[in-house]
Length: 433
Image (cartoon, rainbow, N blue to C red; front, side, top):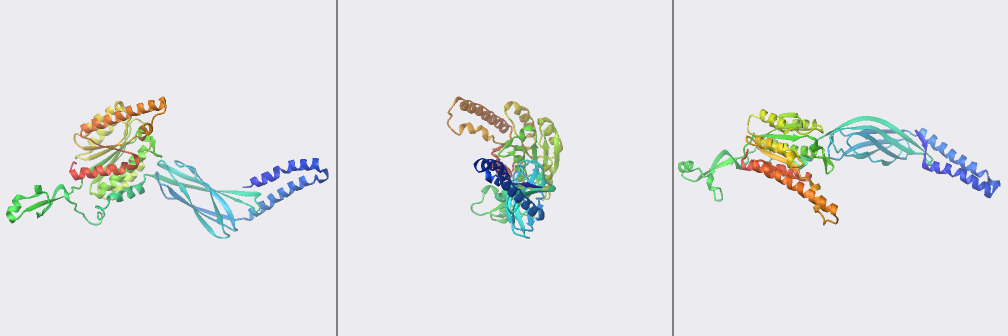
């Protein structure tokens, strides 16, 4: 579509007032007004003719998938038959902000490549609907806008890229895993071998029977146990849809659980998944090997945002019936106060009688905001009092869970994954499973 520019509108708009002024001041020069208008219209016509002859090619390369909370790039390639400056943008639909408009100076018959940043703030599907191109004529009195339909779909999946980056912090001892078996000696309770006692070793590991047989002190060497079952239990109820630091709590929890799943698989354990709100939405039987990571990612990618109340009684009872051996169950959920958490505590406590439970919740940083500065009015004081009561109730819930033998992890979104992995490593070191 060819249309006049703002410059042309100004030029045509001042033609009539200029003609009136000339007619009153110098009637003999009245012809200047129509002449001005004719020149402006001629300039528009010249630009329009140039734009019709101009040939523009454009190609868009969208990312195959988008990771929630992780910026990505859409590559745009543009070529033109003449040197020109082109403005371009892409219409998007789905859980992402509108893309910025960019401009590029093109040389004649050369292809220019530019990148547009795209950021998905929820899981789902982002659709690149169309590419818009705009270029002005040589005089700037007319411009041409082109629309190129794209109809490209980009699924938004859990942020596995961030998981891999965070896992590097815990990968020093696990780097050879997957290439050859690795024995982590000195921790755990699984017997691995006998060795001669040396100064500094724990005297409790001395095997007196074998020491008498070999006529020298011999101690036992242990290795970390493997093949434990780790179940990642994700609450997908309406409380998890609340946005924290630009992402829903659900996606923060998924990122932390995927990180834990990756580290657990590297450590030789078997990992499974269950997701639930009013009923169980997904279940993956615990299995080992790094190929399980793809199954975990697919299971979490299929979890949708829910507006339903979480039924802990049904979900945890069903999970308890599916597990045939003692497992480490990581429950990622959220609660508001002690009243709404009562039923959750009862069911988690009942599950803790047979399994080791790690309870994971995002810390509510909004409750800490009223205490960040000195109160300056009564409204601020009231907010601080309410926040203190809510924080006290949250602490009461964690205290009750701890008394039931549940291990609790509460951390802000940025540190939730590492905090959860550190708790898992401590559990492994103490042989609590």
